[in-house]
Image (tube, rainbow, N blue to C red):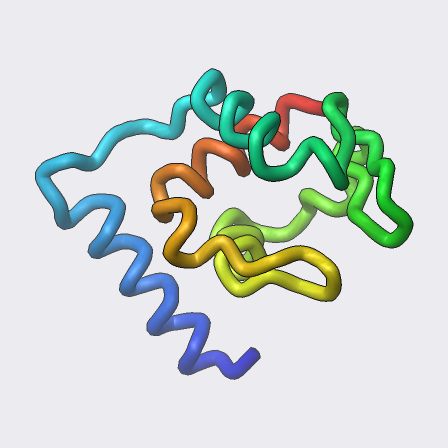
Length: 104
């Protein structure tokens, strides 16, 4: 990923997160609900992956990336994981990320 792309992504994230009238803090409860619907079938209900090569969120090593990189990975998909851009909003994805950080 190019530095310019990261800077543009950061700018877009901050505009979306703080530039709209609907900005809010991330919600771990909503993140847990979204995780159960969209993520648990591969990553496991407790974050212990049930699908080969899916990150294990019960171990913090897969969550060492900054939130923006995790947001981008979830939006774009990776390997067998589908892209969630257009399915989940950035706020929803941030809720999931905050929830993931509670699993370890």
